Amino acid sequence: MAIDVSPLFKPFECKSLKLRNRTVMAPMTRSFSPGNVPNDDNVAYYARRAAGEVGLIVTEGTEIRHEGASGYPNVPHIYGDEAMAGWKKVVDAVHAEGGQIIPQLWHVGAVRKPESDDAAPAYSPSGLYAPGKPNGKAMTKADIDEVIAGFAHSAKRAIEVGFDGVEIHGAHGYLIDQFFWAGTNQRDDEYGGSFENRCRFAIELVRAVRAAIGEDKAIVFRFSQWKMQDYDARLCETPEQLETFLSWLSDAGVDVFHASQRRFWEPEFEGSDLNLAGWVQKLTGKPAISVGSVGLTEDFISGTFASDKPAVETRGIDDLMTRMAANEFDLIAIGRALLQDPDWVKKIREGREDEVDAFSKASLQQLY
Image 1 (cartoon, one colour):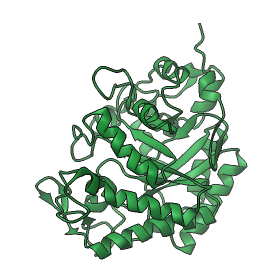
Image 2 (tube, one colour):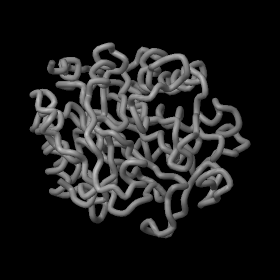
Image 3 (tube, helix red, strand yellow):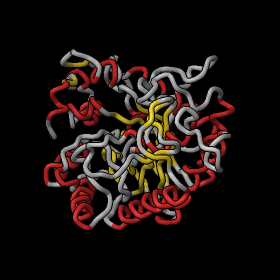
């Protein structure tokens, strides 16, 4: 019997987000923007997914206006007239195909490598890449204010060129997450110590972005338990702690939470089958995006970047549809499966799941 995919194709609305379906293109760093400016290849890349019927595109991480924001080569800026002109072409092309698009606002913090692109240091709460592993400088209060202003500036510029909202990258061990995580935040001022203090930077940042873009535009906040520095790290050990964490960010202005897991089908806490996004929706009542190896058998670390295998096998979407039919979460983000096959969403809608292309690592080496 054919699986019922109708829950995936219901419209969704939250403030400025008015989506034709529940699918999201997950943010994926591609490093195909020479000079940090989106070009015609980037335009075609995003438009191709919109033409394939993706509801919402979250761009690859974009570098906000701050000297230490970058950590990888050829990643697009989200500030400056030249970069913003490039982004306007991307936005217009996605809209022309019936999709919506938001940029992921990103600061890498202590993940920044010395050879990144200039002499700027790595900025972080305590000058730590990971517990016991120094890198760069501990931020002063002036540094904190400057970074927050950089996020707000970039968010405002994004809305000015037509983006449908913004996503703030607070996950995976980058700057905002380095403030959350006690392992990298050893400050003794108002931005360190207690969990509430460690969340203060993010709260102030969200408030600044909200002030910059107004009440009508959607703010998505991406967070994770795991860090690239420690896959077993956890911000919140209990649902109660997670509820407190989410309430602070929600009150600051977050509209949608993007709950990042490496495998979306894994339960978050003992005693419940709910995944992380499921808990977000249950605890906050706000829309939640789930993500993590959709359509594939292995996560992006063990199955791709830390693997010698040239490809990852496809995985059925039965579990995904069961969860979506139960309204466990509102939206589902697709990464590598959509990178490999721009028509993934369309094929699923048309019952052509058997025609979906298996993910090949070779796809990472080209922008298509």
